[in-house]
Image 1 (cartoon, rainbow, N blue to C red):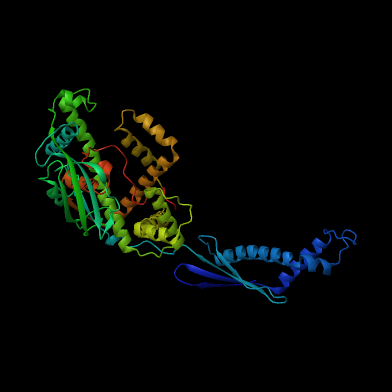
Image 2: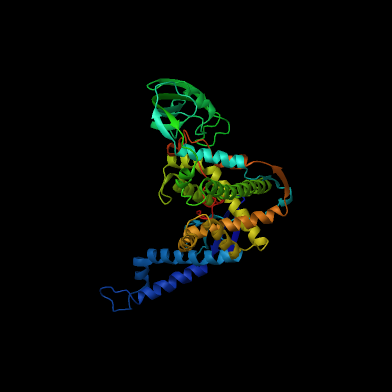
Length: 466
């Protein structure tokens, strides 16, 4: 058997295999002889049917079976011999079998990239240093007051801190925005539910008013792929409401399940939660910089098949598009536009993390997994029950293990990176986690956010299609 390997590009290989004619002929002859002893035909005793007649009647089927088995066995041997590991089912291209000639076929497939993650010393990381101040807690208490506000209808133009109920529709170049909000949106002006340019257009409108205007999205707008683009907005205002905020007293504190300590107990509970959020925010900012540094320092060719799998996974996770369905060209194009860049980023990071772990013998620390579970569980009323529920949920536990393992990789890189510190504040660290909701998610419009004990999301998401 002769084997040759051709590199079509960085990752695609074509393997050509030649099986000697003698081997093919012998296999076919042996199969026909075996069949002649089993086949039954009128006028002949069992096992006495002439081989020539058996060949005429069953030769094509026997040849097909022999060739199929020879390809299967010889391909396995060829891949082992050449130390190749296809990432998907190889595409097989057999040549016509001619009597007396060697049988030849080719297979094409992708392989994993060969690389070594480098450039740790060039990764630059700026770690923020901040603390939760009394002023930060005051601002959080104020947010809680707005959560408990009483609203009353007013007959006057809208102003800051008013709650509006309105219909809002937007188009760009005549096409509706992907997340067009539609009817009966509730929005509180001045509470960071949207960007200031839109609020300026709404201030001064009264109940029943209709308005149309052009609005340019900020360059750093995070959603919908509309950053820097100009949209035509149509608004119809139904209601303008004014807020009456509750006093901050013991009854107010009890409304947030603070049973002891009154207002002081509420402030301490907020401090504990905000400090937890601050730690996670700093960790997330550092992690993002490390991951970006690794991406910039390592350009890795990515297998098309794995990129496609990751795109399908993201489409399933974010848009509930089944990952096992056949897509037409239009759906494929849309999925690649929406998720292609993120899929490549996630796949590259997964490959880099895997390479670092393998080459530098970094193993998951199960004690850190347990410590992480206990730290998150501390924010719940029944921490032991929360831990048990996580341990019984294989996917949730695997997510947490992935987060802890990422932390270990990040720490390994940080020990070798160029690390500096920058003084910051609670609001600066946590602000990236709280984006304007209007025109992105109608369920969040006007919402006030309070730190929650939920675990952070993995940047590479170990529960992916890989």
